[in-house]
Length: 329
Image 1 (cartoon, rainbow, N blue to C red):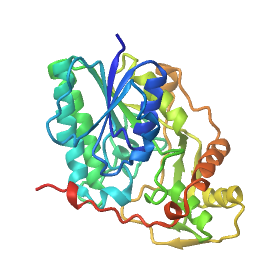
Image 2: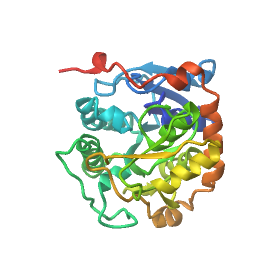
Image 3: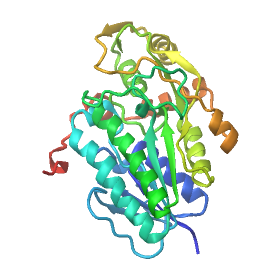
Image 4: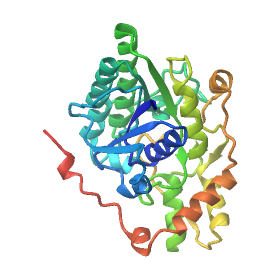
């Protein structure tokens, strides 16, 4: 019988690519999403695949899966500032209650659970590049704290279930990832720049542009996650691309890539926006024999071609998402 994997956040950017990968590897995939930030179009190509089934469900509510289950990948969560600043309580709940529910399911099914943590657990880091043994510099009461602390709690409860109940767990700390199926107007720098370029708008840089990011193409990210799931390592592992670039330099790269004539404009830096972000992937190289292979120029071209293929409506719609139906007291 085929191994069975549950992927939460399946209609999201990373979740949908993970569904593709596990199906290609011969797994039976159960996708789960409540579409709070996911999109049906990301999994529409899977609707006729007999090895893919979908359950619309909020993981903060009790989860029931019939039959056996071998693996769980927990990728359900708002993941961009425009989302978790609008739905802070839901962001905290999916990292806490949602993770608790999935750990209980993993325990009951004797399944291995991999959780999607984030480089945001390092906050605005005082150590550079960031290694897995760095405890971070996070403002717990700042506007970004709802996401940072949700993920930090997620790691803590995951390790507690591993130590106390013997649940097989894995923790991936994901650094900035990009590629097709990103939401164009989700507030992250790559879709923001590309969307502005396509609409003929000036590119907006927050702060003076000296802050840095490191961008990993989605295909590389999925490969690292896949290898980590099947490793024997239970502690957090950074998966990202260590090729660091300043936001101002990156804006110039986008202008060159898109062959546009817009200028770069500068606005105030958001509160607690990290000034540096670069993964130390020494552990991933040693443990998983993994490192990114897709060069930024290649990955950005693929991503830009994807955005160029969007409809006029998608290109110009603003990100005013209705979260009211997802908010519970």
